[in-house]
Structures are given as C-alpha cells and as structure tokens.
Image (cartoon, rainbow, N blue to C red):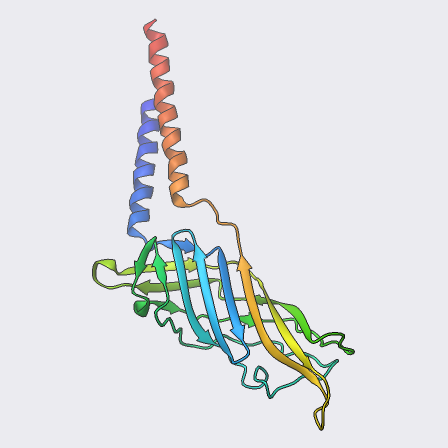
Length: 227
C-alpha cells in the first residue's frame, strides 16, 4: 500500500515539473519604481528574483508639469496622469530569468502605465520653498511579454505589486510683478513593493522531502519486520 502512495507521489512530482517546464514562466516583480522629471520625462525599473527591466518613457502632463504652469496656494492638485504608450529602453538593461537579453526586443502588454488617485491641496500659507505630497497610485497588476531572439527568445508573464504611492515635490514661487505666486512641479517618484511568495521550485522541494520520508518510513518498517 505504501508503495502505491510513493508511486503516486512520484508521478505527481514528475507531472508538476513537466507542466512547469512547458508553461510560460511567471516572474514576480517585487519592486516597481518610476521617477518623473519636471520636463515630463520618466525612468522606470521593474525588479524581482531573476528579472530586471529598466528604461525610459514619458508622462502625459501637458497641462501641469512644465515651468509655465503654477498652482496657487490652497488650490487642488492634478489628480491623475499616465505613463505614455511606447516604452523607450535606449541602451538600458533587460534581464529575464537571470539572462541578459537585447533590450530592443522587449515587448510588454499592456503598455506600462501609472495612475494616481486621491489628489491633495496645496498649502494655503506656504512656509518654505518646497512642498511634497503623496497620493495612492498603481500600475497594471499583470503583464505578458516577450524578449530576445533565436535561442534566447522567451515568452513570460509578470505579476506586479498591488498598489503603491506617488510622492511629488513642488517648488513655491512667491508673487512678483503680475505673477500671483504658485507651486510648480519639480519631480516625483512612484514606488510599489511586495514580498515574493515561495516559487514552484520551493514547492517541488517540499514534495521531494515527502517522497524521501515515505521511502525511509517503509525501509524502517521492513527492517523491524526482519527482526
């Protein structure tokens, strides 16, 4: 009877390993960072065990992030924005499954996006030259992608951290001439992190330990019977 249990356990372990090797690998992004400049440019990094994607892009801020746009004290902030369309990598680094690949072959679906919510209100009576506020923010929770060519080509999935926050810094310019004074965007940073869950390899290790335990118990029983 125990021999049947061992056989079933070995079959399940083999089946799970084959299924894993034939499936599209999924990598957990444990930290996502997007830095935004006052010119609307953005840099980003997506990192986790065995994976790292770094590149550049831009944000849709035509009506608020330039130096010509100032928000008066006590006014509300821009509530949301997006990291626009195409991902620009330009000589940066792409590592998938521990292997460095040609960054120009990377393709992600959907496009990298960053959305903020909640908003904030600028101080009514500014007491310094800079003001920083944080808003809830998020990126897509799941990406499908591909990268590489020839023998290095790989399809993969990415799971992203849930939620995050975007903290922006604004510089206050006091009134002068006809300018009433206001806050001008100086830059911001989005950060989302998570704790990775045990991978399939860890689960397989537990399965192997169970099979070995069953074999040892069977041998111990046979040894006692022989006595």
